[in-house]
Length: 242
Image (cartoon, rainbow, N blue to C red; front, side, top):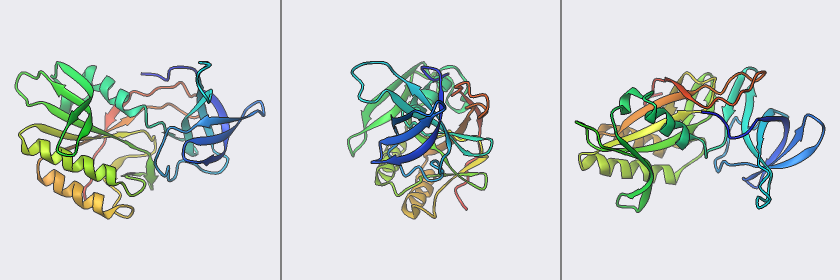
């Protein structure tokens, strides 16, 4: 899986108003790019960081450029575009690279479900022996000392998703929280108790009630040879306790 267009390198000037980022391209031109991330992006916007954008020449778009990747530390990349993980996970599942979710014939996105009127990221059905799987995808980019954490800010929406997954598990369905690790420096994933203790406690409760937690890491490439690789390549351990 790759980005839809070649990546364009630049240097981050600033991110502001959540959805905007000013970037200086290698030729000295300063552009305003769309920042497709509603989170705090903690650790993913270092001053003057190397970043990579995609360009879209559709005249109906307000902003031509979209911010995709950032070098968070020497030799480490993160994909900050939260529009990518659902497709990354879906592609990995459909190509048989997620052993925990193999054997399903049908994969649908944005299916309505739950007591709180939610939409699940991916609904898997048609397995010969297993119940349907309801998969909620989360993008993990917060890296501290080689460990990945989610969330990077307090998330009442994330807590809602955990409650919905618990509801599906209670109905005898497979309920899966899938951490899509879009940071090359991360070697394990854990709930960010130091950022959102309520989410962390609810996640432990969800696991006790039958919710499965999976983490896979994306390739992304090397900062000096960015080829736009987005494929999930390896499972990572998930730690519920600090």
